[in-house]
Amino acid sequence: MYGFVFISTMGNQLGIPTPAIDTMVSLAQLVIGTAYWDEGITAEKLGLGGMSAARVVKYITTGEK
Image 1 (cartoon, rainbow, N blue to C red):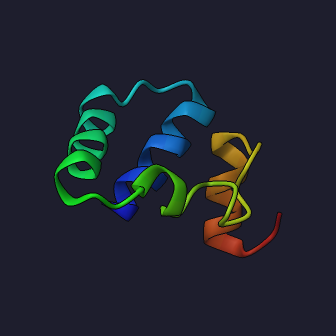
Image 2 (image 1 turned 180 degrees about the vertical axis):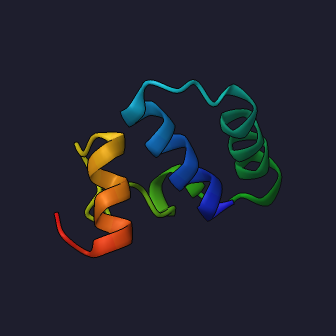
C-alpha cells in the first residue's frame, strides 16, 4: 500500500486522478488499521514534490534536479 500512496501523490501533483488507488489505500487502512496516508512514501518525501512530469523524468534518468 505504501507504493500506492506514492502513485496517488504523484498523480495529484501531475493532475492525474487516481480514484481506484485512493480507494484501495483507504480500504486497506480500514481493514488493516495502518495509517498508510500518514506513513506512506509520498512524492514530497522522495524529493519530487512540486516537480513537473518533465523534471521528474529528467531527475530519474540523469539525477539532475
